[in-house]
Length: 74
View 1: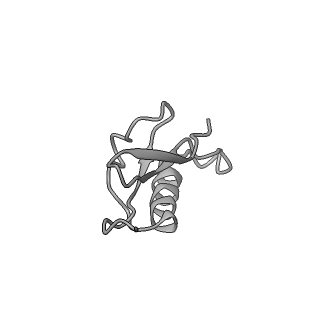
View 2: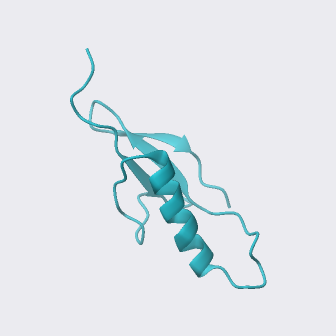
């Protein structure tokens, strides 16, 4: 039996905690990662455009918890 709850996605910081500045829920992986990428690009100094994004991604579970899809990179 499938859950009636849609999956939600959220961004986490380098410690795997909900990101303080990007604490929103998204409808898709692509939406969440695009949002994080745009934010990250605005934060980066112009002399380091290739720095890796330091965020991870989680998906909601049927039990109400969160499961890591992408671990933070640093």
